[in-house]
Picture 1 (cartoon, rainbow, N blue to C red):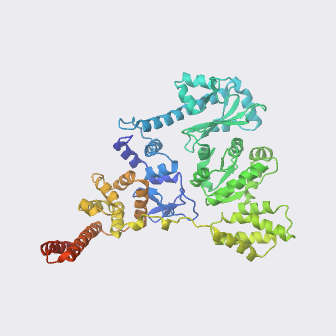
Picture 2 (cartoon, rainbow, N blue to C red; picture 1 turned 60 degrees about the vertical axis):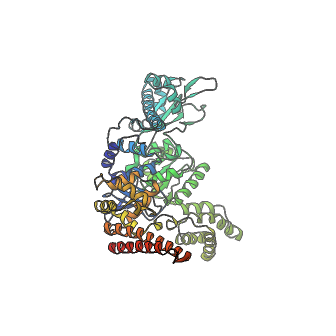
Picture 3 (cartoon, rainbow, N blue to C red; picture 1 turned 90 degrees about the vertical axis):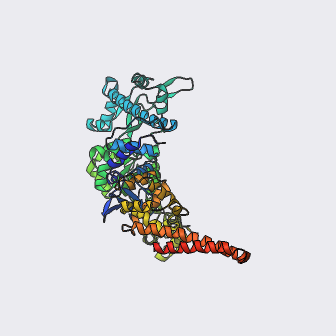
Length: 589
């Protein structure tokens, strides 16, 4: 049952402009009456993701994802329909009603818990900021000053301080009205083996971690003393926080990333802080050693060009390689910027300034060139064995390349580096490519081929000629819809006859399953001039009458085999029924 009343859902749908919503996730360009961009749900280089703002739906011709604005949020944010409604309501400033009596206890409980966790993190962030400004926060303020983080940046990042006392935050939040049970679920406090409940963060410089929407969902704490372990302590995963799904600082830089059409990817909080403060580049941070697929998909909402600038130590290079391979696989253009040994973006900018850092970014090289140079170091190409070694090390990279042209181009560079012929390298690359098993393409997906042409045209009419399509559906009997692949879609559409034609497409998509929504939006996006809906309805009725006629003919054949003389009256009755059906079919032609 619905957590929100239908009237509220309809209000959100009317307010939530699908173009405005999706453009926050995907850069779009006009393509006729619709808009297109790179799909956020699968890896691609050529845009196949279309948005129709007039009809209120999106569809990807590559992976077949499709639906209305609610389904986009559901699929992108990996949330339920009710959470999608809640996200959009907040985005467009609508007051969220109290949870209805018909909502399930689980749904109400999950939504309430997430709401409470967001509130407690907001309160904790305020506490940490206040503690940084107090006398006890002097050491933390000095550390920030020593790192050349100025007061404006401290304020914009929301940096704070967790005192060394064991229950300072706990006491503050309990006094604010939050329960101890909620605080334990938030990860802000923890219970020791002896039963004592204490703050997770003590004597640490605090960095709030926010979603790209700006909501604080977790914290990172840097040790104040060298003897403290670990050096960095992070919040545990909770119902509102998953480390692999968040990019640090994206809430602050997403607009400038979209504007500049590229992002610099760094590792740590203070790498981000220094680049952000100096306005040296549009930057985000992983706050971990390697990028995840979810983070790559999040980045694709804003850009498909990345410059990696990780620490130049061995661990940094390993993380850079893993991140680069993932980004290349996900369809990004990837460059690698190198800094001096022993320096990271934080220390490099402090020592050399933002302009020198920008120069390093300008000198960044495409990942494959960088990888080839790194792999070739120390090899002697006067020796055939070492030539083969370079070639063998480069073979796995071929799997990352999207097509034969890209493989041939890379092969030329490998051949030049190893001092061997292009054809030897290309031959090795092609042999490996042949061994790769192709994945399931869009043309292999089931669904569309199971529908008759009249079904597809009538579905398209529901989006592009809504009033006439509904009138045509009303002329069909329930029996006309039997055995149709689109029966459930048509039956659902007929229940929405009270909806205004301009909102019916979105209302239909809201109620369809993800699979049916993908099918419907694929059809609606493929054809903007469907056949007249009444002709489609007549065609579907003819199909039903033809099926009935074929069934009668099979019965006549059976009776004739049993003996025409014995069953003459029954055969005549069936012939009369078949004749009547033929006349009805002719009337519909």
